[in-house]
Image (cartoon, rainbow, N blue to C red):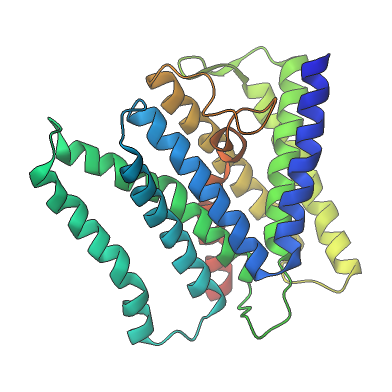
Length: 287
C-alpha cells in the first residue's frame, strides 16, 4: 500500500512538472530536456560501464550529451541559423569527439574503441532524441520571436502516457499472448493493441480539443497517423531499454523517481518515439 501511494504521488508530480516545462516557454523545455539527458546518461553509463567509469569521465561525457541536446534546441527555435553559426555551434562537440578517440591512446582499458563507442551510443540513444523534442515543440516553424505554442509536443506526451496506461490495463486483464518473452515476459499483444486503441481514441479527442481552441495544425488523419507512429515507436523504446537492462542484469536504471525507478525507466519510450515523431511531422511539413 505504501509503495502504491509513493508511486501515485511521484507519478502525479512527474506529470505536473513535465507538462509545466513543456507549456511554459522554450527555456523551461530546454531545462527539462537537459535534465532528462543528464540523468539518463548517468544511468546509462553506470549500467554499461558497470559503475567503473571515473567521475571526471562521467562529467565530461554527460556534459557533451547535454551540449548535443542544447544545440538541437537552439537549431529548432532558430530556423534561420547561418552556416557559420551552425559550424560554430557544432565545433565544440566535434573537438570533443576527436579528443575522445585520441584519449584512447593513453587509456589503460583493454578495449578503448569499444568504450568510446559506448559513450557515443549514449549520445545517439539519449541526447539526440531529447534534443528532437524541441523540434516537435517548434512545429510548424516556431522560433524564439514567435508566440510559444508547443501543442504537438504536449500531445506527443499525452499519447504516450495514455498508451502506457491503456497497455497496462488491457494487458493485465486480457493479456494471454506474449509480445517478446525473451526481453519482457510481462508484455502481451493484447496490451499493445489495447494501448494503441486508447491512444488512437485520444488523438481524435485531441484533434477536436485543439480545434475548439482554434489550433488546427494537423488534420484528423494526421493526428491518427501520429498516434499510430508514436505508439509503435514507444513500444520499441520500452523493449530496447528492457534489452539493455536484461543484458547487464539490472532491474531498474536508477532510483531517482520513488516507485518508478530511474529516469530511463520513465522516458525509455521517447528515445525511439521522439525521432519517429520528428520524422513524421517533418514529412507532413514538406509534403
